[in-house]
Image 1 (cartoon, rainbow over the protein chains, first blue to last red):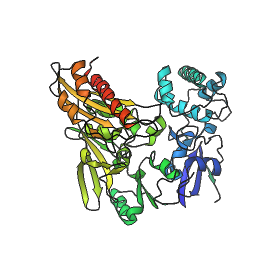
Image 2: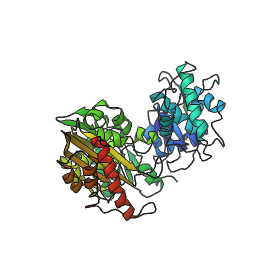
Image 3: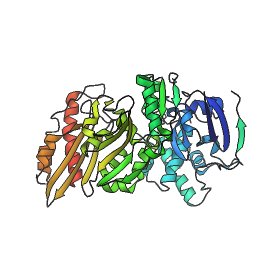
Image 4: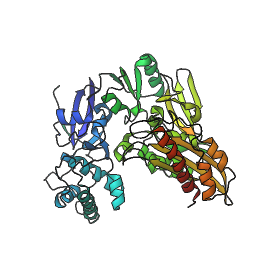
Length: 178
Length: 285
């Protein structure tokens, strides 16, 4: 077992983990962040995408021990504490950028990371930027529209908060029993 | 699937890493960004008993000018390579090829050193290292040594790195002012290259004064297309001259046949893609 400290959606979690534990398993099975889903289980589909220190990663291809000392933002940490949706979440909702919805958590997290790097992407840049995320319903048209809408909303200052990078000062702490 | 159990170590110095690898013998494996290794661990294609994570070696992450070129730390992530203005200035070929590696998520964690040490024949960066005459800085039980890229790639997934060696960084000679292009052919967005061509040329008064061309996935290791380079050197920078040179791209290659492409098809692709890569690098057409 290896002791790791993670800040997940603004809350600090100290846990002992088996080194072979994948970050997605740790998030879902230990911490209860089941909003992050496992899709292909082979690092192709991107459904498990989360932000690690603010950048998108596939949490099925990261060991929990590699994330030690880092901040993780999942889809569950994106909305404001009062429940107001992040502009990307709102745009996906309004544009109906989903069919079955399974890829949506990963699509949204990947889009948040893309917009942080490129606040006004072209269609081609959105498609290229989301190449690591697969929608097997093939609902890509509305996903691209939603990312455009979110970019415009964030440019207008509509809740343009960058991806939540949790404050390091005095985080709420929760010890998880092993 | 989840990986087989292993011991996990995160050394804080290169010496500690080399010692840990020495102690582990043939059962140790280095973890860099993990974007190739972790999927292999999960499929249990690889099952080391000791995993030595270089993630805490901050000295191995960074890009700086070094003599006539750049020294890029082995643990520098693809995303950092892409964002770096020195890379775009001195080795734009590396930036172009890195932009085609996998997807954004993978590029946020995957490292230059990890890609090179993994030595997948379909990986994009080994051909760039070979084309640019990069050199590898390696630390091992007997001290530090330098290995040219041309000698580094030994066989399928096999490099000159010994079991207790750590790749520290890669030195790229400056190709400032050269035209460059990485041409990659893939079946779908995030797929590996069926064939890739790394090309860079120095033009002088309408001719190609120097050319460097290397091929991805045309054998177990990246292939330097010497026949193409020789034909281009001193040739007019024209579509005809480039097409004639590109026709030689199959020389010295050993492409494989698999589910996605036959060896014959790969040989054909190599000539077509070489023509495209060199034309783009030379600004022709």
